[in-house]
Each structure stands twice: as C-alpha cells, then as structure tokens.
Image (cartoon, rainbow, N blue to C red; front, side, top):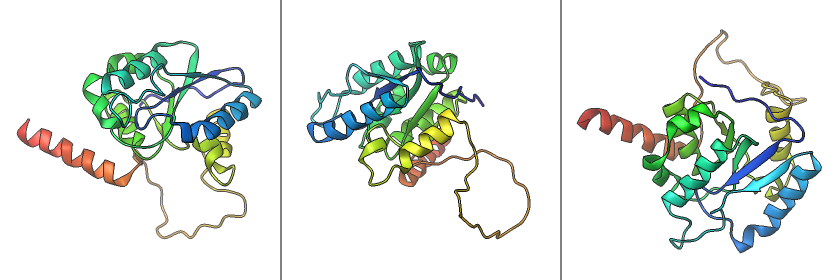
Length: 202
C-alpha cells in the first residue's frame, strides 16, 4: 500500500468535482471553505471543470478525468478534495490513468458518491485514500468537526479514533490486522458485485 505524505502549511490543495458540479447554491459554502483553508495556511486550486454542467447533472466523464489527472500530475498539489457528493463518479473509471496516479501519490478525500472513485483508485494503485469531508463540507456542516478531522488526520497525522471523553466497550479482546475499506455502503456493495461479475464472465 502507498501512504501519501501529510500536509504542511503553505501546501496547495486541489479541488475536483468527480460527482456533482459546484453549483450556485454551493458557492457560499465553497467560498467559506476557501477562506478557512487559506487562514489555516494553505492555498487552493480548482480543477478546470468543477463548475461545468455539460450533461445537465455535471461534467462529462472525460472532463472530470482531465481534472483528476491534472491534479495528480501537478507537483505543487499536495492533497485533492472532492468538491461535494452527488452521482456518477464511477463514469470516470474507464478513462483514468492509474499509472499516473500511482506515480504521483497524494491525499485524496471525499464522501458519498466520490468514495466509489477513491475505492477504485485504492484497488487499482494501492494508494491509501480517505473517506472524509468534502471541500464544501469543511464549512457547510453545522459543526467544525469535518475541518477539525482534516487538520487532525492530514496535518498532524494523528490516527487515533478516540475523541476526548469518549468511552468504548470492548466486545472481543484481541489484535486484528487488515485493510479497512469504507465509503458509501451501497456503492461498496455495487462495486463488489461488479467485480464478482467481471471475474465470472471475464
């Protein structure tokens, strides 16, 4: 597995829209997220097609892939956030250059539909990707939890799941080792079924 490097102040963060585009209704939250991350010491770069609505529900698969490739290829970009959730990130799979992504490992984070993309990239390249706040969610949620977790995981490189004053009940004692795959459970199930069919009919 490939572990991407953590973020440092002064790094540039890229924003892509592999699912739904950034809409007029999302602009306030997006602008607030820009201000928040800039105040935290980062600069922001948006993909060429994040506002594109070519199909009426977003950019085309090839337009989305152009942004994904550009962000991975750009040496100045140290982390990539999906703008928001939505639908159809799986349309990008056939056009992705997995070798390019593997040779330029960096943080890739999103939730909902975009976890289809993050999981496929992990499967094809071995790059560890992250189910977490989208760029919009850094400020659109009612609390600062998403932003705090981004700083905790990607800047401070903390891996503990325990929050202050939280208590856990042990169901089965012991030590386990393995790969944790998360994301939108329906999409995970759909991808698993797709892989089974591909192996069966190959």
